[in-house]
Image 1: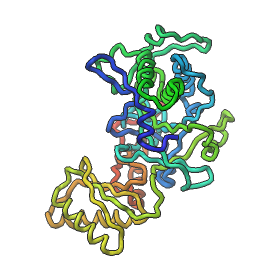
Image 2: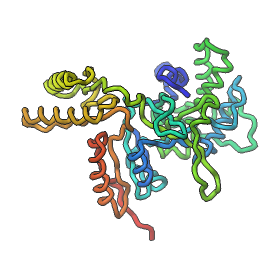
Image 3: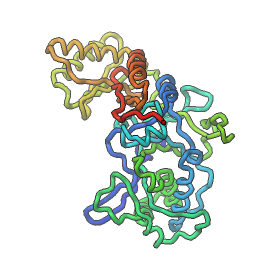
Length: 398
């Protein structure tokens, strides 16, 4: 499991030079929000438990893509046989927050949750017998690499010519990259490995290849505009973390892991308040002065740090709820002095970075919206989350 940002970047640093003017990152994580479509039941579980379930990729709807991607990667020169049992677990997202196919497939009368992972990339994989204990890992959502392949189960020989014929698609790729092929990835791995001298080249190729497999999907599904957050165990350390679904109608138990968006245990006080650079400068100074007064009342010193944007973020800590209430009050007091309402939202690290919830097209849209609006007021870190309804018209079956 990748524990730090540096480790993650080392294993996910793979660029393809299309020509002298175009350099494409295979593992593309742009600073934009992503969306998770789900049922209303699962939504309530996420809110109440602060857990999201990452499913073993071999047991997802995309298991055939995993098998195909594995065969393609194994065809690269000097990459050994990759074990059939996958250690990768994934949570799926979408680039689009109001996509009809996603409503129909994953969120009938459900919701679409908008996430912002720009500043929240540390997660805790919980042990199966615990609601708090686990290992902290680093992860980011990555755009799926769509490939136009046509692999039959008896197709054993995958040569360079065939790799060149497999065209790739990713919404991050520039229009100039019209001839990008799977062969480019193979060459990129070769070039990357030349720069890694710590272990044997064959090992590096295998490791890079293993990391790549969960992001490969067939081109016919490109309309889904999928992103994946993938958690990969590096060995059998996973036995203490894997749980299994109850039997479904196929009598198969699916392995999964429970994931929290959390870095620290709540045994220390909040250490930072991050303030958007675009926020009123007088408000910035006011909050800084208020934080000093707050610290004098017996709390740890709070560092005030500027950050991109127009929002305020509070770091993790055992007094986070209390500090959140104080910050909201400081903003209200400042607004009264200038007689103006400011469009500022306050977010709390250590919780899933939910920014909005959109209600699926249904006859019950408004009552579901009202229910979530009322419920979120009881959970401080959700207070500023926007609750919306989908603009897609509802159509009943005839």
